[in-house]
Image 1: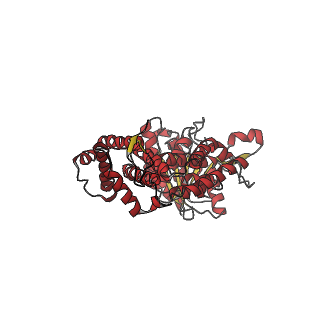
Image 2 (image 1 turned 45 degrees about the horizontal axis):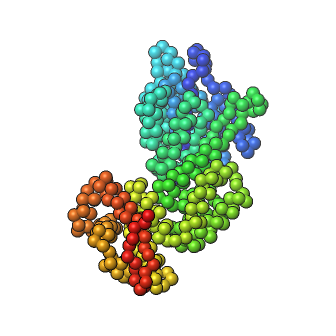
Image 3 (image 1 turned 60 degrees about the horizontal axis):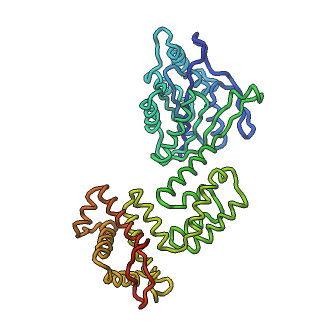
Amino acid sequence: MPTTVITFLGHQLSSRDGTATYLKLPYTFPDGTVTQPSRSFVTELVRSLNAEGKQVDRLVIAGTATSMWCTLVDLVANNDDEALFTLLGEIEDGSIRKDGKVVDDALLAKFGAALSKHLDGIELHLIIIGFCESEGEQLEVVSHLARVVPVESQLVLDITHSFRHLPMLGLVAANYLRHAKLCELAEVYYAMADARHSLGYTPVVKVGGLLRMLEVSEAFATFHHTANLLPLASTLKVPGLDEAAFYVETARLGDAKKHANSALAAITLSSPPLLQLAETELRNVLAGVASNDKLHDRQLEVARHHIHRGTYTLGTILLFESLLTRLVFNSKGSRRGGENDHDHRKRVAEEWALQLPRKDKDHFHQLRKLRNALAHGSPPGEAQVQRALADRDALTSFLIEKLTWVEAIKLQEPRSGRPSQPTRRG
């Protein structure tokens, strides 16, 4: 996986005589390594990553026309390339608008090409951005980054320099690339130059905790959208949670309940900081799993979830299956595990449907035909179902009507071993 470092350059300091630049500072990394003094932190970050064996393949630097592009010469050690330093002089003049000169894309392209020759295979991309005052300018930054970052890159984000709102924009951009281009956001670095007065050195901070928080929030979002516990399990690493997630997905609710209780006990015994953040919400999720050991209740719960969120195929299938599962579960004489026997389920449903009043029979057959149409792509063969499939609002209303019907039916224990007549709840 190629490694791409993304950073921003700050605006010129108060001096307007062409000498403005960042301070030359040594940086102290978390492992105690102290760098040589440098004006540009990203220079030392690239060297540090390479020294760790995390070879940087691409360096993306974004800044305004008046940013301190001249500090990038620190990327080149002991260099005597006259053409590079001639371009550097033009960059310095342009960044302070000397004699009407400006830093534009053409000048940066020349400077980047000259600089790249000395970077041992690192592909350099220099991007001019605006001050990002408007939403359009902010989105333009994300678009620039998306154009130059390869698919499936490992991203390292440096938020040390630039305007204060750009680190937030950079993190959002990196998160967009994580999903849109399948990138991995490996780490976020920040060199705390202002802390040197108090600490006596300039610490380099890894802000990777932000990434873990993003992952947890996205795992909860996935759960609320799909009812799938697996992202929470892979993110929070609670003993028992992965097993509970697996057994919920495979409809083995007894095993899921056992492992959900194990996960609840594990949370009580140990709560690292990230888990403390999510503890209340995770306990609520696990309590729901631990209290739900009937398959038809689980199917109905997930069906309701998907119908209200517009994932119609899964919602319809589970709604219909929840009814069949409950019919088998409530059918006297049904053998243990019969709710998982396809032929038995079909026979029980057909016998039950024969006893239904006309209105309930219509609900049942319409739901079955919609289920078949969505699951198999077959024509529904009924006008009302066809109308429901005409647009989103019609399908939503149709499914909510069927959901209300399924929820309202209370199946009484039959006397003869045959499925019961429906009655209304409430």
